Length: 380
Image (cartoon, rainbow, N blue to C red):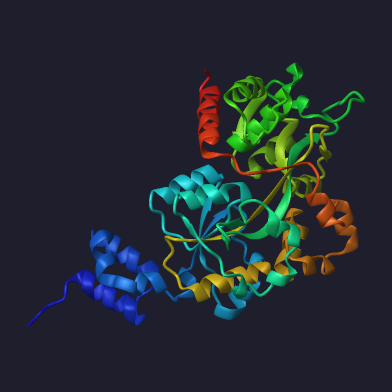
């Protein structure tokens, strides 16, 4: 009589629903059974997983809160799984290594790069309930469409700039500028986001590059000089805003590269801060969702999650908790006018049009910037 192997029995349990994908992986690992052989035996079971608790979302830290997808929890009584990343380049390298996930949350400038890596697949607009309520301008951003198909669902947007302690930094009546970060008396008093995009955005703007997202070799060299001076003043590079928020609250640092969310966090602590609108132009970003090629969950679960995130009540929490904008126009009807005014997003369309919009960086240019950034941080 034929006796099934342990791996085959586990796969049968997975297909029948007696074993969740999460428990399947744990049991296989405990038994010392590799996934290479089991994948071929499982066949399409992994490609159409229907357990709502096994949907995997690859996210920025802080977005795993159920307030961002309440309809998903209401429908299924459970939350999806989350794996967190601190920066998009780190996320891409993990995806390239074969990390399986169903949905992720890059920003628009990374979409083409992620697509070139074979990490994402097209989105079907007909399955997005709020598609007709999305700000039209956000659907026209480079990276939303590739080859005539939508690969990116715009979801949140905001600004990056300098957050500084108004009681510890004296601008001396001068116009606000990124140059504050380069002043000699700021040595050891600032924190920067550990991101080549943000650091070289400052370097490119301060060195006068014609296009900070597509710099020539000569412009990269000039920007690197600024980045080197910036590094000299940097006390530490942060990967989570809470790192610099704590340091700023204690007075360890007096200025930091920041996102909108930190304005709310610092003011809630009673720390006197201001968010700079520098003469060189504030940095504006838009991020959103992508569907991954390496995912194992069904499209029904994927689109249920995306639709939950696009609901106005999810956007209301995004605005009120983090200070970011939501791409669903109907969201703003749920938010108190005073809150919108305090955040400066009464007119979202006008605000999104301001400043320097983070754009796609050609792969060869990015690689050169990464090399330079690593050299600067290593002290070269």
